[in-house]
Length: 188
Image 1 (tube, rainbow, N blue to C red):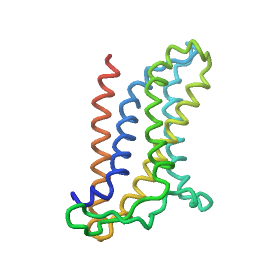
Image 2 (tube, rainbow, N blue to C red):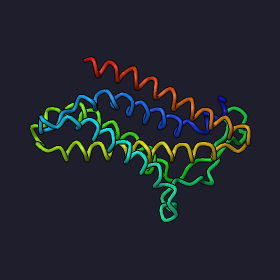
Image 3 (cartoon, rainbow, N blue to C red):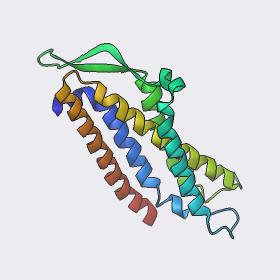
């Protein structure tokens, strides 16, 4: 697993961060957001539905034929073991643009969602609906791209299988760590 992680550490880390951010805010903190119309008792259900719908859309977009030109591709650059100079895998073209930037941009959702109950600057539910749509879309989009790219990076088949397992470990680790932080944010 160590040599596989040397090759796939970037998408593995991005997947961990993505699920960490998601579970630390969703559904706990999001369920505390209140509608501008105090009589709207279904507001949280709308937010969760919007998140889930756009998460699905984010997961489907990379599978569209016209979108394939934007998916990060395996590059010709080879990643070598530093000690033995044995080729371990290949790099990714467009990783920063299509995976790293959207993942790290998701950190902006912390203040936007946590302070969305104090909407002195935006007195509309459309702000929160748009926020949930972006949050959900970026969740699905980044998750699919990470799971698509990482297993193709190692050269050996056994390492490709290990890459898939590392991605699952990053997914579960991000979910658990995010849920723990989310519990602290929710109770604070």
